[in-house]
Length: 421
Image 1 (cartoon, rainbow, N blue to C red):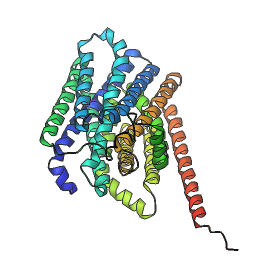
Image 2 (image 1 turned 180 degrees about the vertical axis):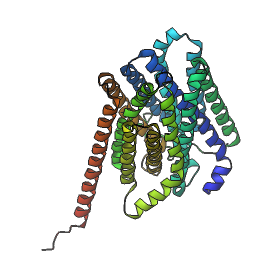
Image 3 (image 1 turned 60 degrees about the horizontal axis):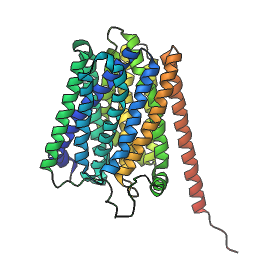
Image 4 (image 1 turned 90 degrees about the horizontal axis):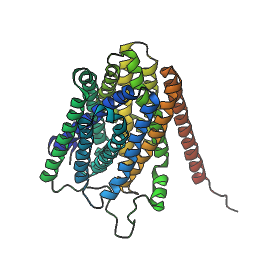
């Protein structure tokens, strides 16, 4: 099936549901972050809430391989969207006084349903496209994330000033319901679509626990370096997940969602443009001998560098320009990473992506707790972000160097032959 035919026919319905859900998810994330910072008044509390959301995502990622043995991935997507809608409705019907406690419950619930949605959706990609089209399909998905960030970022900066928070929460819940209904319609019109990752395991081969010791060893053997780099990406990204609402509140105390909304919008615009730029960049880098894992690290270092530029910029427009470039390379990392995982034939796709997403959430949760504490005790948020990004870049370079040394040693051993007596 060609990529043009895939996106222009039945696949368009699946993509539209993802787009609606992504817009609602990004709007939810920005508004809840700004609201939590205003409600608690301390970056450390914001870090705790974000860490709770990450913890929920880990649970959600684990649940997908378990649920996929009973339900189709399309059904799992529907349940995740309805769950997100119900969670947001809790904030709509509750009092402001109760929100201080409810946010501690809402955060992990949102994480659980977003984790389920993310892993289930990316586990379906290979069911629709051939292996040679996975880079292009993942690039389309990354650009759709960018569109969602643009719409969600601009909408949050506008709606926060124009509408009561309860109305925004209600709007979020309604959009999750719309996405769920589209997925329901999708399931009814595409009964022939086969869900799941790699072939279903034979009974008794893997057991009920998706992350057994044998599976973990297979994951480390085939994707260990990628997982280590992905963990570093998640850990380092905590600097802007916590830092953006803080610098936005300093930029315009009257509308603390203004700057973060526009930063996210330009970041999203960069992700959209990445659809055109990523595949040619990957081909050129592969042409000089770089493998997917090393290309991922190159894109990751560039992403961190541009995020550092966002925090170090003094002017509004320069800040947005760096956010745009960060989004472009951030989407490129997503494309390379998920294409590499989806091409892995040693481990079930849903299990592999679930393990990856869990590790990513662990890294981000740990980083967010550390960043929240650092931002609360150090009054200069730009200095905190600078230290975080420089450290992350150095660690990524060290990982790449260690990988290169290992490859060279392995090649030297394989080419060495004992002289005959």
